[in-house]
Length: 184
Image (cartoon, rainbow, N blue to C red; front, side, top):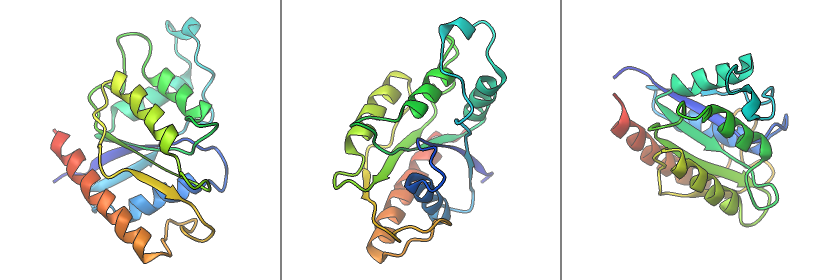
């Protein structure tokens, strides 16, 4: 099988992002035929319908990164019980102008980690609602709400806890099968 390209959208811009670590952990557990590309969202302008006729270069790059992917992986923190503005802005940009939704039909999954005891449950639910509208078939189970603790996942994605590694491997196995179902 040829390589399956996965666009990874991490909703945190923080240099030491726990969610970026989680994304790296998923990449390490994934099958060899999966290639992951972290999509840059930190340089996007705030979406405005004013530039629908002439998209800025960063917005065009984002749309191309999404369109060239076989699947999507959204890794989001939870800010004020919802998704971070930077992630929502990226979604708004890549789904516009009207009729040019770059996400349509791309299979995906939503995961996240937080220091809060409920993880990112509410942010993920909000994100799933948005993705449903954008015609992104989202893996339903298993849900991944990781309560992040120091040293759980290293910067390189190494997982220190065997239970967490086993749980995340179960997610990756289901996610991989989900993406393969849609592969062309």
